[in-house]
Length: 206
Image (cartoon, rainbow, N blue to C red):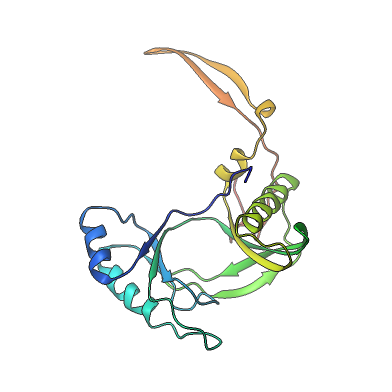
C-alpha cells in the first residue's frame, strides 16, 4: 500500500522465558508498554520503566478476561513507548472509501496504568497536525483491510512525526557558517503550530 504508517515497534512474546531472554540481551528498551494481544479499554496495559517491572506486567497482561465469549490470545505484546498527546479518529468506510468524522483529544493520567479522564471534541489542532492525523488514520484503516464499517484509530501526536509529513518543497538548505570540521550546512523546515493549553497538559513556553 502506498504511504507510510507510523506505528510503535512491537514484539510478540509467547511465554515468560522468551521475555526474560529478550531482556537479558538488551532487546527490550525502557520505557516500554506491555499489553495483552487482545482486549479493549486499556485493560491490563502497563507502562514499564525498568527490568523489575517486566514480569509483573506480563502476569497482568495474561490476567485479562476474554471478551464477548471469544477465546483468549495467550500472547503478550511488548511495544515501544511513544510520548506525546493522545488522540483518536472516528471514521466510516464504505466500498473502500473512508470518511473521517472527527478527531478527539484524550486526557489521561500518568503512571504505569493510564486511565482516560476526559475527552475534548473537537480537538483544537493546527491544520497541518490535523491533516497528518487523518492521513495516518486512513493508511491504518487501509492496511488492515477495512472495506466497509466504522473504525476508531488511536494516535499519539509528536512534533517529529509532523515534520516527517512535510513535503520536499518545505525544506531549505542553509549554511550556519564554518565549524571546526568545515562548513556547517543544515536542512530546515518551518511548521506553523498553535499554542494550545490542553495539548500537552500545561501551557507551552515556546
